[in-house]
Length: 342
Image (tube, rainbow, N blue to C red; front, top):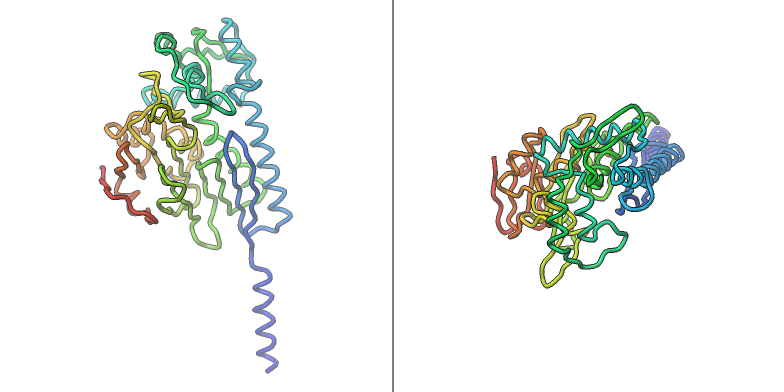
């Protein structure tokens, strides 16, 4: 009997000491942010999460595309034909973004802020607008590119006054990598960082892979779930978050730099990036050429970015995915048509 009581006490103590899930939420980069930490004392998890979310606030203020920020001041200097002061952090981001732009044949082009503004997407709240075709033609003719930038110690300039940097297709992913490094330095081993659908996994949750939902592009629910392993990142670009509908046509914030108009061949594009120092950044930037280029070139760009797991939902609602991605997807609402691409 005594042994039985002792055993029960030990089991109860073990249950009391079982690691719990700690979560904090915020709203940064115009989207919902959720930080989940597993298996850490609550006070330490709270401190680590609070510091990480404070870092996101700092980056949001620094990189904002239309409120006063380092980026808007830089763009204003470019428009005047002047150089702008830039710290090592922002200079590094611009160089990294330029490399991704080259890899994407400039379909990912953070220098086309003027086009994004013409469509009304550089606002906290936006209304249905269709820009003057002549304004679009002028912005296209100026051919802004991060290749126009020239770096000097502490400064950056542009040989093209039309360059207007908008890092909206890059910053969330870059922040994932930044926060993962911060959390690791603070002793966090198991966490899931979710910045508006760009997600990076650290470790596991109670010994099991982290599980995330894949948003249905036309319904307010998840269409599938996917398990993420340590260091992997998943990112989606879609036409269902920042968009408006005018005259029955959906216009999303993802602008095709070749046409100056919102891309419309795809409803959503999702990739899983293997563990690596730039996994989060890649999960954000790599979806842009896949989404904008459409089904015909999606596999080409996925391979250029070293991505094997890719899934896109085309304009008709057909799912096209690589075999490795399909092997990982657990459907909650199975699509009518699924096509394997390889």
